[in-house]
Image 1 (cartoon, each protein chain N blue to C red):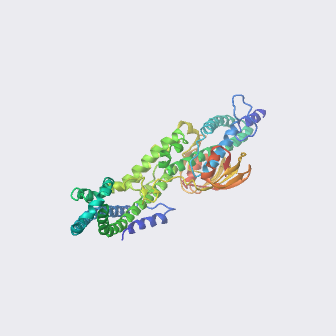
Image 2: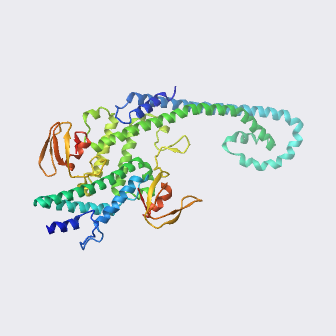
Image 3: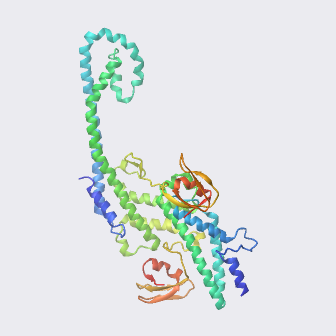
Length: 272
Length: 227
């Protein structure tokens, strides 16, 4: 069934809104394949419809001609009297849908408005069911196409949001997160980091500000805080120039600014 | 001791005491108050607001001065150290507001990137750096969508800014201007037209909730503060 794969992807995206799953390449591929297939079907539907419509118009014109031939003997006198009233209308009937009539007019100069209407009605009668059928078929294929595309956009958008979070929190991709990204997403990460994040945070006027820090939830209450080390981070150099050795399970009383980034990355726990 | 007192008076960002430095026309604490309100507005408004260039530049300059003062104090006596800590706390808080302000703008800018760049009046509200940021960001995302999957679709399906289903469902996300905002009235406005038929008496000091689109003008004029 159309749209099934896409709805799988949408569900996956929704389910994983809080964590970051690996890029679902097979599913994305199968959805793009479905879109291509749907698009081809739509195109062939349009071609088929145009062809059938031409045939139907042809058919209508033929039947109308037959009727005219039958009517022409008894009604020849009356049709000539009404012709003068309709010649003015000839010009504004020249839109492309009615080329058939324009072609007919030189052959039957006596064509009256009434006769024209009968041709139009006949064509309409033949084309209408076809048009309805066409639109039904077309919508059935076009709706899942649009929907699939929308889901793909949404899926990639959600991933980009996560990648952006990573880019603000870390300077480079760790191996574990690298494995979760598609090659294109790694390119995006680097591009985003280089031309968006770094270009902005490294502006000379923002030097003092350490804009690159992850967004803090609460405003700082104090300069020095106590932190507990959750994961070994080795030695870090503080703002004042001294080194600080952060071993697992040790506690330190440090300047908040020095360890802010490590807290955001989950290496340290803010105790007090 | 009296030196330090003086420093506190001059340098304190949040200090309500008017500056006595002759060269400063506006008290730096005014900039901080202004920017803090701008930051609150920015966080509460669905749309991107005017960039507060003056306040930002001024505060950045003050931060630099203050950092130098702290460095001097740190090499001093014990009393100086305590004052230095007070300074540092304040400095960190000012930095926090600035950072958060800039980042809030960036996050809105990213979300409505295509729309903001295409809309001249929104674009005018950005700083130069933000325009560059938005352009780079738009390029990076467009390229990414294209490389990831759009390139393998038929050309007529590829555009990223179509109206979907002809139902006015645009693919370009726009700021939800119809969102409701809470705000406090700070100026004398009087009767304010909130829709074609209705007017509402907005009294100074009172808090109201209205559609952002309606009160946008008042916010631009600085007659209300979002909360």
